[in-house]
Length: 577
Image (cartoon, rainbow, N blue to C red; front, top):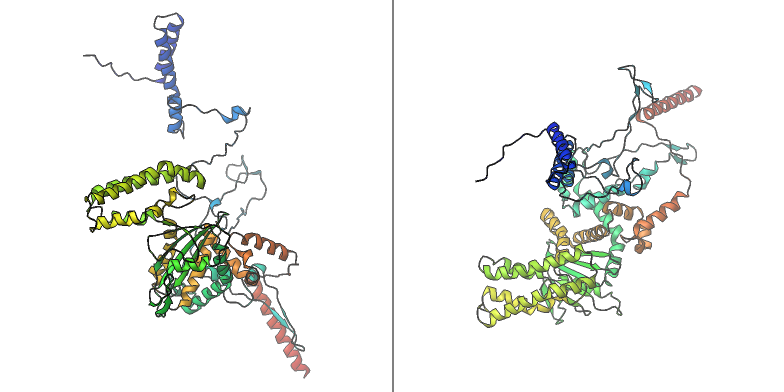
């Protein structure tokens, strides 16, 4: 048995001495020269690692490079002839593992500035040691502070009035106040936009907002809050109507609906789309429709009432240009979802069918494993197309090569199981297989048509806005209330998909509501910023009014002086009389 060599502590001095002796033996032509060279290199690497470990901030990546595990990347400074100078920035952002956000992450934060009261000039002597000199360094940090959902600003301004002709001369108001709404209007545009967002996007009921404001001693009745949301929806209504006409020319549609409760919506007689027969309908839904335009724009539309997603799709497609080719339409397997007013290429959601078996996976584990393996491969292929940034045509070719054989084999296996009576057609599993086989072409549309989605997950995510509102607010009182929510959700969701700040967008709609009525196309979410910039530029040419703003103490002193002057004048008139 081979003996284990004793453990020897290698210090830096011992390593240097060993390197010296090994180098001397190598130079004298020792027979073990190659082995001596390797030993010298190993000890030298060991010393470099010791040196790195003695420094602060050394990482595993540097250690691996020193040990030869990872290749050493070329120095960008040397490559650009900048050796010995200030390092060139490579453009890579430094890693921050603390998870906190910096001040640059809050571009809209209010800023306050504080200078030292005792020092004004750089280079003054240090009051502590008396020898050094003081120079300013800039410090910055951020502080979050709490406040109510709405805050109140009390505007005090003078109105000078003639005692003879009664002509009034009000004092000019600061521009930032006027931009948030007309004079004497209680709710500014920013407040209205925030109320609408809190109610419709976060499901905060009116009563809950009222209680919060009352708790913070800024009471606002729930009915007043509702009135502000009506104003928001009325201002945005022209854009909502235009979005429906613009969405009609999309090349791909994804639709679905979910239940909603409208208390004062009674059953109505409605004509069936396919048979023309009128029936009494009572089912109330919020239908959601996503329309993708050729420009890469996605429009999200909501509509509540006694209708299904297919009826809403027909309503939208009635505005479609007749010369356009049939669009793609993705939905679940419901028979009431396809369009009837124009031809569409129907696609069915694979996730809906897959979940049918997923719910029964404990009863049919073997069949579940087969289908899970197929859809796992399909999902992997779809992820690959997204990572590679493939176009719709490239994605179609990739799925035809990778996913289509797997899907075809799955459908053949299902049919074989039914034909050989391995699966009873009248059983639950047989019903699931029949669901797939009947919709085979629609489920495999993503392997036949460029841009066809695999699932309807995109519209399911959009419906979460409706579900959140339903969970918190529970119901709408009237169809008008549901319409308000539809308008605000549609514009907000479309703006979000366009990368637009929803709050700023709503404020702009309210601020320029007269222009919105005249030209709603200029205020579509992907166009409104250009329009606002032009309007601001035009208004900037007008001379700004002279505004004289006082502090609270200056205002009180001024009003006290006016009172004293009035009293003196009144006394003078009494003496004269």
